[in-house]
Structures are given as C-alpha cells and as structure tokens.
Amino acid sequence: MRLVLSGESVTLLGERALLWNDLLVVADVHLGKGDHFRARGLPLPPGELNDDLERLAGLLLETGARRLRVLGDLVHGQVKPATIARVSEWRSGIKAKIELVPGNHDRHAPILPPAWGVDLLAPVVMEGPFAFAHEPREVAGAFAWAGHVHPTVAFSGRADRLRFPAFVVMEGVGLLPAFSRFTGGPVVRPGPGVRTFGCVEGGVEEWG
Image (cartoon, rainbow, N blue to C red; front, side, top):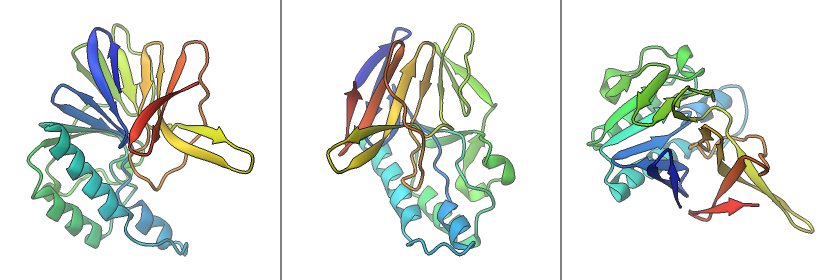
C-alpha cells in the first residue's frame, strides 16, 4: 500500500517492512530471541531465525533495495555462536548495505560481529523529510519513523479474536510493526489522527 507523507511516496509492505526509494526499513528483528527463551526452559520450536532471515532476503530481492535499515533491536541480547555463524552465512549472500539505528536490546550486545557487515548509525537519523529512530518521538521539521512498540490490530469474530502486526501513522510519527514473527504487542485502534494498517496474508489493509 502506498502513502504520501511529507511529499514523499512510501510503500507499506505486508511482510512488515517499509520501502522508500531504494531504502528498505524494518524494525525489531530480535535475532536470537528464540535461543534466549529456550535457554530459560521454554520449549519453543526452532526455525524462527531462518524464517526471519529468508523473509529479509526475499524482500531485498523483490524490492531491489540497495540499503536495509533496521530501526532498533536487531538482536535480542547476547547471541549464541551458532546464531552468529548462521547470520554471517546469510550476510555473505546479501549485496545490500545494512544499517542499524540502535535499540534498547542492542545495547546488551554493543559489538556486532564484523562478518555481519552492519553499519551502526546514530540514535536518530535524518534523511530527506524523514527521521528514523527506535523509540517513537516527535522530531521538529520531520516525519519520524520508529519501532519498539510492536503495534497490532485486532479482529473479533463470534468465537475468535485475531491479532495482526500493524503500521500506525499519526501526526508526525509512524510506527513499524515488529519484523520478527516471534513478538507480541499492544492493539492500536484507529481514531482521529491515528491510522492503522494491518499486515494480513501478505498484504496491507487499512483498519477502521
């Protein structure tokens, strides 16, 4: 779905990413989160790491983006050697430049493996009419994109209540959904000055 914000056309993608010109933007990838919880005794099935990496690679190929910018929480604390090796292998096949606007979880792993080839940016990055940060904030003179919140939208039927990751667009601030499938987040309802866009079955639908 295409939107025009601050005079620029951006595309909201159903795979939980934003495309602006040659820049693909995602937030809250949380590499290693599954390992983190399995180490604490939760019997989670493996596979979320490969799933997230394959979706990222597919998006870069599909969109032709030359840059990938992660709006914080690329990792979920200290990552295991097996995760480092898998991401390094994946990175060797990616031509796009990868940039990280640091998030709160990234602070627990301040030194990213060199083989990942990630450029660490400032906490707030200005580019064109946009600002990019991890935590939502208003930035004077710019429309600010952020992550951190993991917003969702909800659909309630007679017997079911389903949640879908969502983009949220407000006055001066836009929220990206968490890219990782292994995340939850609050339901955000549309209203005056608040537009919500659910990621449903590979597409994007405006809610409400």
